[in-house]
Length: 102
Image 1 (cartoon, rainbow, N blue to C red):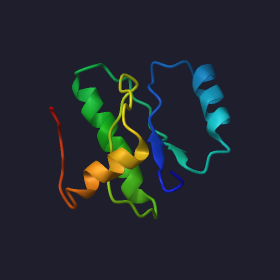
Image 2 (cartoon, rainbow, N blue to C red):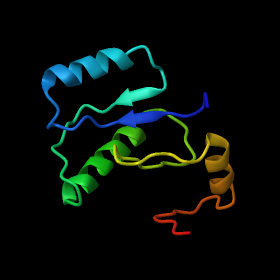
Image 3 (tube, one colour):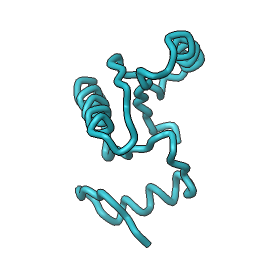
C-alpha cells in the first residue's frame, strides 16, 4: 500500500559492509526510513525493547502522520494481506493491541 511507511533498524551485529549494501539498496525507496542508531539485539532480551523504543522515537521525531505502528522482526512472516491487516485494526480504532491469540 502506498501509504505504508517502514522504519528499519539494522542490527549492530550485521557487518558494516552488509549494512551499507542494504542502505544502498533501499536508498530509492521513499517509504523506507533507516534509523541511525544500531543496537546489538538479542532475542528475548531488553535490547529488543530498546530497539523498538529507538524506532518509536525516530518515528515521532519526523513530520509523519500515522495511525498505527506494527512491530515486526526478521522472524515474523505476514500471513495476511495489507487489506486484511487494515480491516482488522479498523475494528479497534485508538486501541493498543499487544498480542492476538486465535
